[in-house]
Image: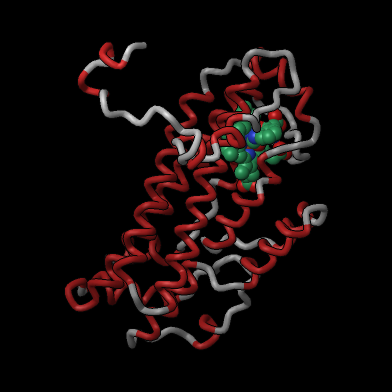
Length: 279
Ligand code: HEM
Ligand SMILES: N[C@@H](CC(=O)c1ccccc1NC=O)C(=O)O
């Protein structure tokens, strides 16, 4: 094209990237876009792969935000933590809506791919497991899935032993002068969150006088927002799974949809929901 033929609107656009960083360079697009390797001859496997890879990318960002929020909470620096937690909840909403794309895949379409998945399953997603752990749904037994990948195992082990976001919120309540039982503060971090009466009473004080405890009130609502989004994700997972494979056993070895249904009963931040009945 002749220089004079360029429309005025992009006349000054940079065209030569032999010596400078381009869009694709900055985003490492060659790496990202060459990481899709369908194993079946089926057209729909690309959807299945990209759906999972994009979910894992969003999970990577969720963990980035959650770990940063944990740090801010430890430092009593709540406003930046609020922003991070709000972002995590919005990412979760995004993943909730992403199910609409996957649900365009019918049972016969998925059946063409499934034999090629072997025993692989989302159950083995180490980023997902870490998100569950950071949010307090600890389960040491699930670590053994990752023994073959020592780095992932190590990281999960560290998160298993560290305080969860909710443990940090409970410690904040205590630092702000609200009474929390000593045994709740010294709880075994490797176990899932268990409801505690002193925590419920402390949150009740916050909700009965928000203006006195505004930052804690805001934190509580951010956590409720996040748990609500997480519950929607679990629900969309199980309904999409039931729609596509019915009640077949999972490739990961669980009972499948009935295992996922059981997971709908999990309450991440129990006292934050329990207190509502008492208000
Ligand atoms: C056709 C679509 C899908 C089907 C049929 C499906 C099926 C299942 C089943 C049956 C399980 C139970 C574990 C097992 O025995 O395999 C499971 C777990 C899981 N799946 Fe999916 N899934 C689908 C899509 C997805 C997507 C898009 C994600 C997003 C990353 C995902 C993430 C997970 C996770 C994280 C678990 C573990 C849940 C837990 O332990 O609480 N799945 N899936
Ligand atoms: N558990 C699924 C397989 C599955 O969905 C899957 C397999 C490999 C990679 C990601 C997957 N997604 C979520 O579990 C099944 O039983 O069909």
